[in-house]
Length: 430
Picture 1: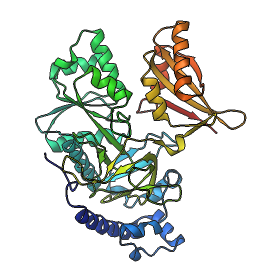
Picture 2 (picture 1 turned 60 degrees about the vertical axis):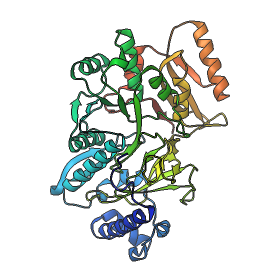
Picture 3 (picture 1 turned 90 degrees about the vertical axis):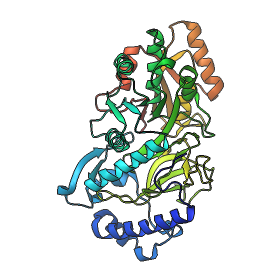
Picture 4 (picture 1 turned 60 degrees about the horizontal axis):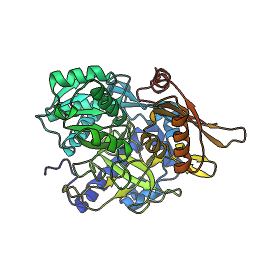
């Protein structure tokens, strides 16, 4: 089986490569980055002493708040070298602008090329992109450039509109799609309602973005099972963020997203900023390698994952990340129970009585977390309501508030004008 990038070189060689690139990054930041130059001075950091991974614990971490408050101070080049402006989606707080140079775009292209190769992509494939390529969305442009480098066919259709997606699939016969998993369920529903035999379609694989399709043991979660039970299609999960300008993508083994060690150093840190052991949850903390415009050093993403460092059956030796367990700042403490949105999403996805949902969290008068579930029910009967409430209580052991909404209302909540992604979680806590 083919492998890509440096993901299949020996761990010793990978370590040497990364530590060399780390030293180059520190030198570059000390000269070109106003933010990191100040950080090194304030913490009396001698970058010449940072040579090994074990030395990195001496370096302060960087937070999303730093990026939000001092966005321009992270820029390491003159504005005339910036080719592309992208931004984060602003899931937690205000969006952050990430500026890319020509070299950064080339790096992004290589990253996504490696990702598609990891997910068994070939030049003979045609990919239908069911996501936005506008609104400063880095992922959309990354997929496009990566597929160009791969030599595959590209259909830029954009998000939503199941009828148009299916009309295009039946007409142009793509072999693969790039889509949000919950939207793939909408494709399946439309196909059933319109007597389209999805298993006779040309589409044989899907690159899944933005939502988990697996549990932490790599088995399919409810969303993944619903898709694969209805559609004989190979799913590949991905994990990425605008800030890291890099993706972790599954191979055909489906056992975690592979690190591209030439592009990124990843640490998983505990509450004391210490590296956790493999198979233990920690906050994904990244150091970008080879980024020219806005490189980041020990940047805490807020995502909680586990890592696995034994070689993969595909032949790659690089570290692999589990699906996201949750986001640190989205953790919910509800009536003594700790909840993460992905676990709530899994629960709601498995209920036949719930067609769609939005999870709404806010603070009550005592400053405690409250959970309000906006649900689109399968029918308006009391029996349906009773089944929903009983299932929630049995699985959560607590009873969140439930309100029922129409299909039109849930669409308005999920697809807000300023958002590029489907909104399934609203955080209104103080």
